[in-house]
Length: 78
View 1 (tube, rainbow, N blue to C red):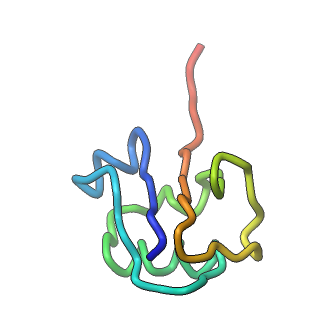
View 2 (tube, helix red, strand yellow):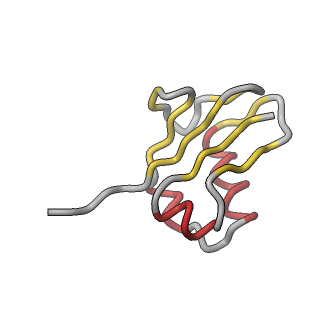
View 3 (cartoon, rainbow, N blue to C red):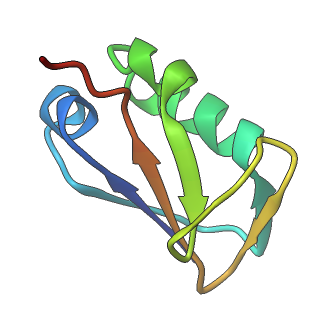
């Protein structure tokens, strides 16, 4: 099981903070696709910064069962 944490706008659009995926391992890019299929309104997921166990990760990195994957959307402000 891979736990996915959604923050800010992603959490609001999905209507939940956590999503659990029953998989032994998945690339970050595949998790993005999974989330878009489950929540089509999460278009900003493509620009969100991914992290695995609190360390930023690239799209080709694999998350494994027991990992926490977080998606942090871009922040704007002034």
